[in-house]
Image 1 (cartoon, rainbow, N blue to C red):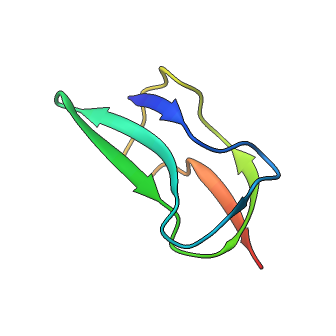
Image 2: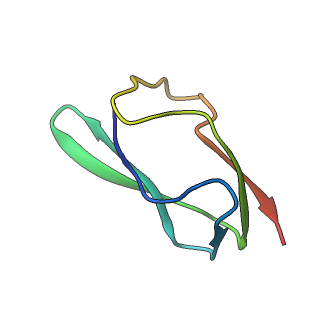
Length: 62
């Protein structure tokens, strides 16, 4: 489940930045961006249940 979203569409991010936090089996995990770029689309909202291969955030390199 998504517990927090740390970015908004249009935000600039750097490799390693936390973009959102998810909870699984009572453990929270941060999701980090692997690249520098701009957040183009956020496909989830707080409280959403997610699947392992689901796209959560799209970041355009640059």
